[in-house]
Length: 331
Image (cartoon, rainbow, N blue to C red; front, side, top):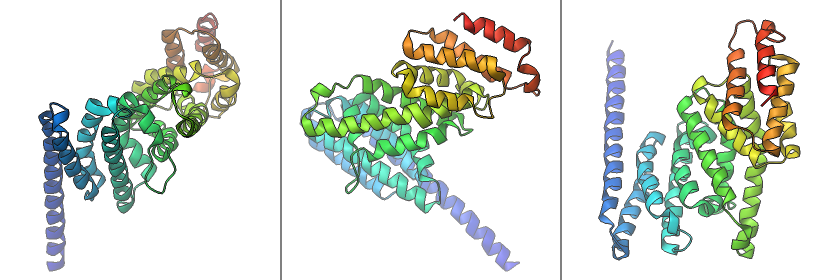
């Protein structure tokens, strides 16, 4: 009886402690974010440095993934407000770099302490922050790595995490991943190798090559399988279609053909050979010419819908398939 009482008391104490820590870290995150409004000109750089130093201390002392998340809104705002000048201003560049890497280290160490999958933790917690980096300072994002690690360590982790996050049944995490990848792929198109010096060019182009290969392989297979085989939540299907088309538009057919065939030849695709042939032909068209975005999204949504029936065997070769083939063969 007494042991049960102490056990309940300890559980209650732990819950209260956790709640208080959450409230404190949330308040600190808001205070740090609000304090950025004090920076009005370059003359205030010492003040900004002090605020950022305090944020790095908070992040370094974080004991849980949840506590890190509350400070990431501050990191995002710093990137949004100052990221565009990162490669012209060494102080700003190092400031943003340090903030992201301290955040990354805090997420990795906290996730490990909590026994969580670090790849998934990075994806679900940091993609919003890294999206700001892709939007405002993509060159910095591509080279981020902790001391002793190779340049690009952070982006390598992100690309490894993406296929698993895209196939998870968590719409918020899925949309965060899709948004990050959209911004990342768009940023790559704006980077000119000619504008980079020799060593920088070698490092960055190597990272870009890895991103493109990953996008055209595991990422694309995950997107196509999840959406076209009716696995992903309906709410994300249109976003998947948009991201698929973005990858295809910047690819040659021979670079993605194996991945597309792999996605449609899985036993999860249950709509038969006619639908498969029309879909693959449409995917190929996206790499060779302009393909209407709305039509492409409709096609993927129709395949998703047909997979929701209890008897997909009756669908293959049935009226729905005939309508699909007629509709999208003309696209």
